[in-house]
Length: 166
Image (tube, rainbow, N blue to C red; front, side, top):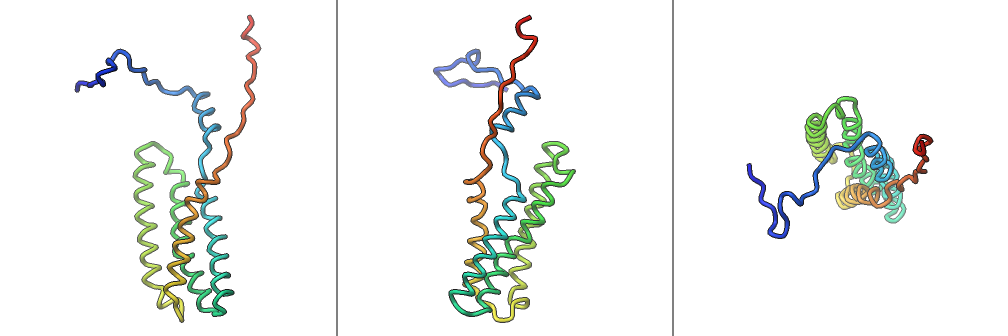
């Protein structure tokens, strides 16, 4: 397979890609920490609880609060299953296993969400669909909030090599 370089660049001018050393990979992970899926789940639980309590307080109807709470659960329960699947020991065996696991757990998450949504009229006696849907949307948006408030990069202190001057 031939590689065509842009007209202003020849194939010889391209920087060579090389694998990172263990130290370089560790520095990269420290500089750009990932967001834990469990942190997202905790925020979703908190937002879902607040939304349910606010819905109940604003409307004065307990059924609206329960509907909003169930709407939050429709997001949180599948997220817990997904986070558990992603953080299991098999998910990090290799890149192929991680990608396949991500897709499989995402399908499980969607199926559980749909099943819970379908069961809502049976499990919540006086269901308020608007409260349920608003709570679902607000709880789902926590993913974006968690990304916005991801952990700050850790500052590392460069250590001088004691053998460098020899």
